[in-house]
Amino acid sequence: MPSKYDTNPLDPDFPERVKAEAEAAFATASLSDGAAETKGINAGAKTSPPRPFAEEPTIRLYSAPADTSRPQALANIQEDSAVRRVDPFGLPERWLTAVPYVPWYIGLVAGLVLLLALPRSEAKIRFHAAQGLAAHVAVFFVTMILGGIGKFTDIASIGNVIFLLVTSIMLIVFAIKAWRGNPVHIESVEDLTNWLEEKINPTMIGRKD
Image (tube, rainbow, N blue to C red):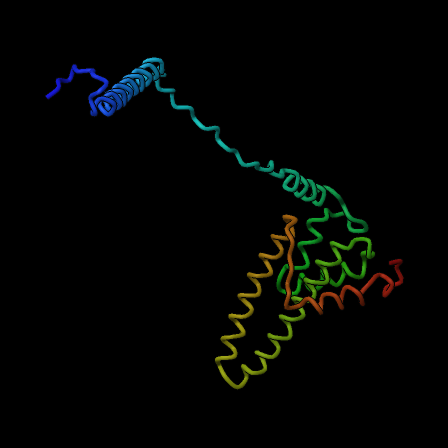
């Protein structure tokens, strides 16, 4: 049996042994080179230190600046109504806008006088005068109805007293609001207010409107 060192070219197994040895040597060399490259790559890679946490920028939503002009404008209007005196009465505007809401027929007479004396250019005062007069007319008619029914039943009389008390409180509240320059709107007498403001004017007593 020939030994592994036998290189007799006449040996029939010689070519196959040479081929097998060459393939084994090539495979071993490839593995060695691959390991060396891997080691070199790993050795060459630098380990970077951990980056500090970077805070993401905060997204700020746009907020429009507060409108401070409206309160200032309201304060100016209130100041004007407190200082400006209205002819022919010579009283501040705020008093003339408040007096038509005073209960117990005082406001009724005041509203009628203001509508007859003031021209349409005094639109604010005329509006409050007409609205106060309309409120007093409505209260007067309701109390007349309840008073008539009260002749037949005590419940209507009690209701009439309660109605007068409630409406008097409401009129006082309206007078205070008008005196402060706040808007006052009585929706239930809106149509009557517009009618009174249109029909009652200074021309009824021979004055210019």
